[in-house]
Image (cartoon, rainbow, N blue to C red; front, side):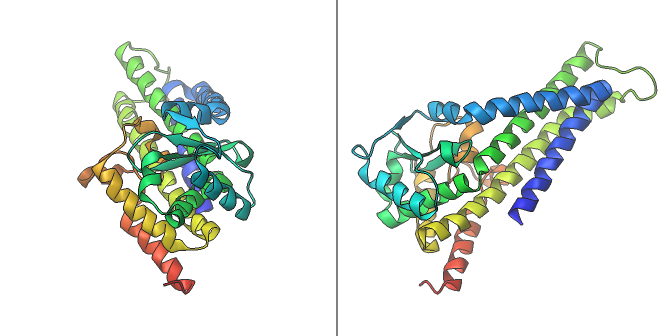
Length: 285
């Protein structure tokens, strides 16, 4: 179901992009929009992991430098039949973690010093299993494509705005878009792209929770860790670029009320409830 939902949402993003390009410059605009999105995705595919790790101030560690984290990741990777990813540590008291990389052979997992301070080994295994599930499901690639396409749609909206300001971008004939339609596109297209991107992220988080529970062998390890992480990040949010917030296992930014509607992460209570239901179905107390 998650795969079908993600495919549908990516298709919606593509249609928004193509329609926006067509509104701006006709059939040629459609082709340019698609070509631009392709170039952005190719660049993101090859370099997004390096960019994100650098933006997060993550440093690669050896087994001697982080023995427990390294051994947990190695044990889980073996259990999941995945190549051993590179292991990174972020010097930050806020408890969190993420995975990145274009495929399982070029993957990396990163954890903050805060997460290793508040979680026991079983809970840490639950978190790292969640991240390895992202790697195995190639969620990083899906998220990168969604993010770059959403970025391309936002750029198209900006182009439409400048075209209206300077009187350009109008097509001759009856097929020329009405100015009101252009204004609506500038407002609604980026908003729709953002909502679709968030829906994709939420869908993949549920899938990684389920996959991580299967890898570590106990859904309650991850459920317990998520509750601790939510409390920890509420007290100590991370200072991260909002464009990378969707990659973390829990939202690293402080937010509540109406902002929760625009969160890239599912409600924590729902995530924990699903894991507890899974544990009950396995006969785990």
